[in-house]
Image (tube, rainbow, N blue to C red):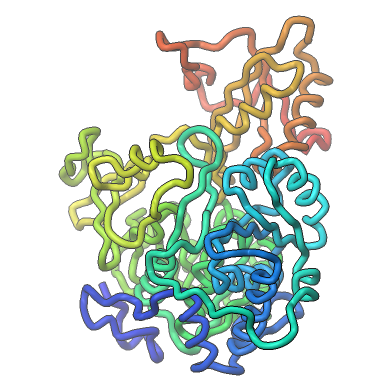
Length: 535
């Protein structure tokens, strides 16, 4: 399971044995050691800004002092709502050094999404980019508790003069780094409580299992508010290699950026692979330094075509916000391209396919994928019942279905969750339904995912109207405009269909699958939000 020795150039570590683990106790300790070891070597490349390991350590020390001067105490929640700029990772590391609990916020959130996160986390401060600050201030003023909003420029201007104010909190592996909000199986987004150990182990195991080299350049095109750029940043600290942060993902510009930055390792997921493949083939498709693309959910039918077109190895990884890395396919594993096999668990992790009573199933049988070991989240913030459900029987229940083949590889086989996966984004149906039902015309709403070749699933809303409202295009436009004002764009239903009634279970629950008409076409007779410029 270890990467082949000849494939490495000064590997991140000599695993030594199955129990090898990262030696650092905290992310702050890792950053300090990386600054001492790698000094002026480049660490962050964000647009026109380049920061060395030493620069990052010094600037985050100053920002941590400024946070303390603003009244932030260990354990206080600090939200970060910024685009993919250098200020994002600087704010993250600074809050960690100050002993605060970070709360990443998607910049695409609307007032409704943001208010839920700030209220639920009880964030005392939002660090926002200039573009996000007005919305953050508007929402922070009405969340019901003290919540200040500062841009990074405002925070840096408040750095106190003189020596450091207070010693840095002595963090340990089990201390909390952040609340990572994710759409769960039901209800509103909930926060996964993630520790230093979670981040260190996730980054460590991906670095070791993927064979990260001293000459690598890691590239990320996802928003920093998601877990993936965060573990990439920690991973780059461990090896002393640069992290290139793109402003956003662009299918047409991705490989140009790879060539420009001479990137060698990246991670993609969701609709990104198919969007890349849909770009017209170019004679220079192999003209780059990329050697390894890590990907969650590689399309089986295109896996070999991806490798042949771009001349780089594509390796499957599987995990979640709740559990970090669970499975990864080693780059040198033979005979797995195009099979859908998701690899092996790293040391310290167990992964099984189980029946509804939690009993492991034999190869070939489909059941729920269960995980235990380290890393795992500490639980869901403010949700002891949800935590108990997720960890019943001593295993984390992923809500994903899988089957194990004769060689021991696990294959993904669908989901148990009432959640829609739109590209790389999770959408909780209940959250969208709540916003729809706040419109004066809507009596009740049911949101369900329908198949889509590009995005995997798209959210479709079934809406019952209140008396006096008619199922017209004007009504649909009004409902969708209301939804766009309240939610991130990716959560807005792609299709809306009016209905007179919902099929119900004896316990008065909507039977959502019965709302879908027979056959593959779930779009006819609906209002398409992408049509006529609706989107």
